[in-house]
Amino acid sequence: MATKTSIHGAWSSRWAFILAATGSAVGLGNIWKFPYITGENGGGAFVIVYLFCIAIIGVPIMMAEIMLGRRGRQSPINTMHTLAIESGHHPGWKFIGILGVLAGFLILSYYSVIAGWSLAYIFRAGAGAFTGQTPTGIEAIFDSLLGNPEALLGWHTLFMAMTVIVIARGVKHGLERAVKFLMPALLILMLILVGYAINTNSFGKGVSFLFNLNFSDLGWGAILTAIGHAFFTLSLGMGAIMIYGAYLPKDASIAKTTFTIAAADTMIALLACLIVFPLVFENGLKVGEGPGLVFVTLPLAFGKMDGGVFFGTLFFILLTFAAWTSAISLLEPVVTWLVENKGLKRVTASLIAGGVTWLVGVLTVFSFQKDSPIIFSFKFAGEQKSNGVFDILDILTANIMLPVGGVLIAVFAGWIMSREASRDELEIGDGHTYNLWRVLVRFISPALIVIVILKLTGLLDPIIYLFTPIVDMFRS
Ligand code: TRP
Image (cartoon, rainbow, N blue to C red; front, top):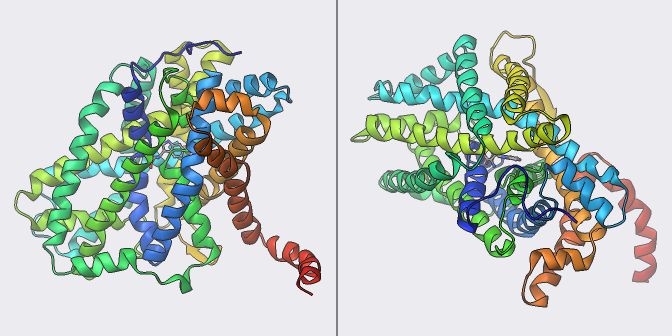
């Protein structure tokens, strides 16, 4: 049986954990990524699928991850190892943790570059660069940032350094305190921006785009993107929430905690869309613009509104903080593993992990340079991608590694761990809720994910073909 507390520390209360986990969940995924993938995938129908994925796949798997973390109390790799042995299975299950640490590395490498855009925009906004600009002018500002590798590299380096510093100091100090003020501030500022969007003539158009029910164009690729994003936005599938769970007091309710985090995360993502889409229509921009969407629409609004310099600067400061609290959770699993298994000091482990991630991030910097050799176009699941290595990293991690990691976590929690152990750890009072959770992690979530992955790899149709004679037999 694992120890009662982790060697890396503990949260001071259930609320501290909620804040930290919400800080991990709410990040670029909500404000930068969700609006642009919703735009690329046609709006409402995609949003509905995404909300369904959060409820049916995200919530139960988040409960599973927190539960495993709290029971193992170590880095994800060692937690999986310990729990596999505890339940009499092969320690090879620690492979889930290894896959996760790898995914975390790859995600953070590009996450840091995008967070660098946000850092750069603090100063653009502060200098009044957006004031009175036309849509073309704003796009030119964005393109000139992307076309400047030295600047991108500089901001990426600064952001990685900020992440390493917090991790090196330990999660409890600084992080807990910072999140307490910054998250509410971000929410208030976003509500102000929604107020601005409501007053444009295109608010209705934005809302109807966000909630249209046009399922006809929704392909399997979009469905996989929705599943992948449910993992990405809730920080699931790679052990980030698992390691945060390792610092959770034993008496906290995992179910209640999970609902709070998932609700907060979803609200921020929807608010971001309520701000972005009216502005897109108002200014004649393209919804399918891609990764630059928020960095073009929001500055336009800041350029026009009263006090735009102030609100714009504040917004990018808060976005950077949201990204910061997420980046920390991407690095924490590997650092704890280096400390546990390689005997490194926390500071050394943070520097090494941060340094390697920084190096991989350089690839993303060059993915946005028009004439660089690593920028190329390709098609994935029927969608055209044009940012080379950045798109590959994004698809590989968010659309493949996180869902696969999630299936494995669900299978582990539902099939490998004993009923007694999960029941004891989750401590859900009434049997119905527990049974519902167990059905979701044992059958529903893994099945949904596997079906979509099989469909996209072209393996689903032959399987259906094999089963048709059997189905026909029952029909006749
Ligand atoms: N959830 C964060 C966001 O939406 C990103 C993130 C942090 C993440 N930790 C993670 C994504 C772990 C996947 C796995 O911006």
